[in-house]
Length: 90
Image 1 (cartoon, rainbow, N blue to C red):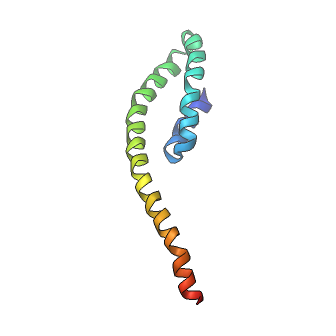
Image 2 (image 1 turned 90 degrees about the vertical axis):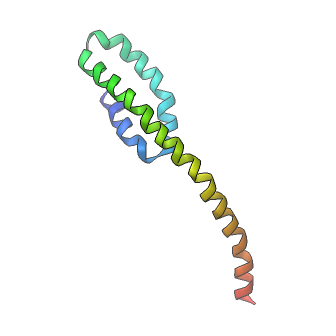
Image 3 (image 1 turned 180 degrees about the horizontal axis):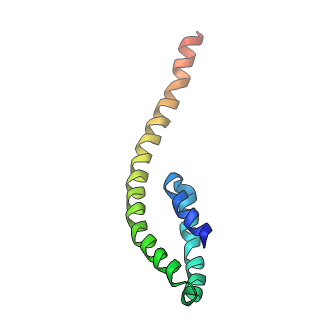
């Protein structure tokens, strides 16, 4: 359970890992639902966490939609590099 919280704080940095982590969450939360009667405090914290997660995920989606433009620009610049290299070499 503590590892899940750790995982959530780890999320904002890596989108690729976040997707993996996010798909893994339902299984963990399913187990938590079983143990929720044992640890109401932890479950309440989880609920808080999950409500804020959608905001973080929304921000991620925005960030991710920005990336393709940058990567396409990089592809452009990398395709123009050989020409530049040939120019310098000759």
